[in-house]
Length: 422
Image 1 (cartoon, rainbow, N blue to C red):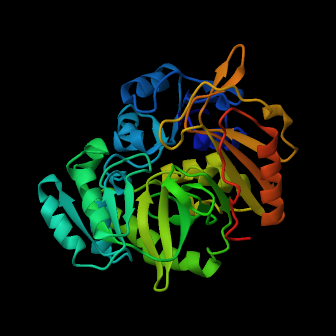
Image 2: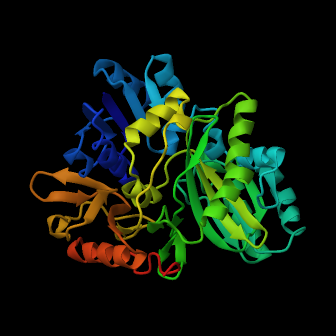
Image 3: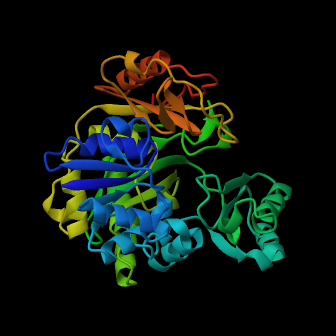
């Protein structure tokens, strides 16, 4: 089978690494890919958001199946365009991807089907004063979220009303997040531990993956600004079997059923970002695809042929594939460029990639091949250094040994990945 992976980050490298293990795979392409995927697939110089070019490439190269990594092509309708051309894809339609593309849509859907989430209200650009008034109706802290896609950075946590007023103005008036801020969601702040719970779904059957925990802030101790994710580990001890079963019953299944009932069936990966509150798990947000860096920590523990699972989701036959996980733990530590998450520096040479210990897998996030220097940094998050172990401590220690083997100027990484669990 000829397969195209759309995207060029660590998630896509991890998907390529896992799909490459499938005996069903014939040729693997990655658009646009990176220096890491170049060793597993044929990189194609097409942007992940160039829907017409991606469809044309599939037609010209007999691509039979497309796995969509990032959220943007999903919200642009890539899977719809592929289906219209007779090409099967893994990922939700444009209408179903609104679960991630619009936080207001997701919150309203949760309200309709009784899924537990924070108290909230949606405000448009003309309702700046109304938003400020609503903030004064509920106790702080307050959370201000740009409605649309903002690369994981459109969430502002405010501890005072003055900060909240400024955040509202920043989103609605200053357009700090562009069109993503045409509307905002203002909601109450939830206390507890965060958990990432991804699930495979064919639009009817829902199979949770092992729970993981991401580390959003740039600095140790969850300090500094939010990022796309500085590391992750799985399984997260907070995600007990009982908690996952509860989230499946109260959150995942009701949402998938509601999407189908409303004529926008959701097929692909449904990712619930959860807060484990005193009242139980509550939804912070939904993503409509594999998380990054969670994928790098979860897929190494998957025993199945990943392609079998994805094809079953696309065919509406997920219930026929028993999804199996190996024992042990997996940890991924993100090595980021200088300046990240603001304006990351690019073009630094990376050394030591061949010197990592046995058992360490380095997934490339923001890299590009260079004829003379080998591999260069080309993004904010540069590498996801990943290791499995019989215990979480074993996995953490091995992953950090891998980090210690690699160097590029200005490199920054957190030294406390999985510390909460340990």
